[in-house]
Length: 279
Image (cartoon, rainbow, N blue to C red; front, side, top):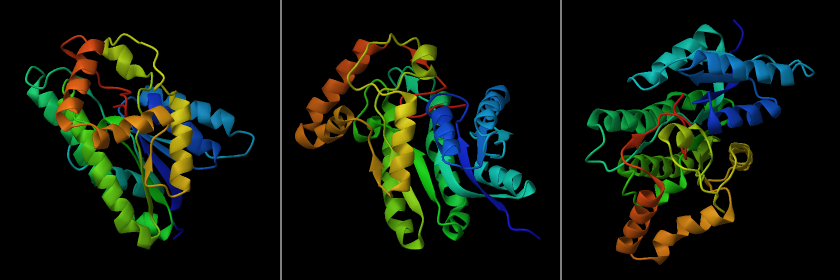
């Protein structure tokens, strides 16, 4: 019986940062498994990557059209990979979504679903394949956000989920380093993706903006270098340091003013958020 083929698993790959991450990993020779709800979008991405890899003979990515929100995502993905003779060398947890508006006025069930996907599913997939990652000296790249460093009036639950991703990933980095498993957390600032379009957020150019491609390249490079936290752009790195410099009450007020300036209430989005995108 042959050993399973090593692959890079990318969730939330149907748009935005997830799509860009898949392209970057593929360009560096990784065989991919693309996971999202939208099979048509994943197939389109697989076609693009297959065409780019035709010269090198790289295998076409495997497409898994799965909704990762329900409990047991790790077991479902593991079963699908095992059935195909595949085992993760790298896990890229990008799937997630954001809800915009005051928490008390947003749909409570949707906010709980956001917690399930952004937190529980990410933790599940981060832990489900540790033995495989250790055997193959691979790693985990979790996509958080600059929001994870800040309190988030106006996107309270979303910011809190990204704070979990940041804390959890840093702890895993310390725990798994001795086992040869790299763990990095990618914390971008604003990235023009489907999140803004679907939420109806007016786009205002900002010095903090980074393209999905630039964020993906930074994430890949940081993971391969074994960096614990990756924040693309000096402007965004400055923002992550503000909570250490300013009183907490002032930070709350600054974020609240920023959110109410940018957004019309209520609105929601389920794809390509500032930190990640739900497929």
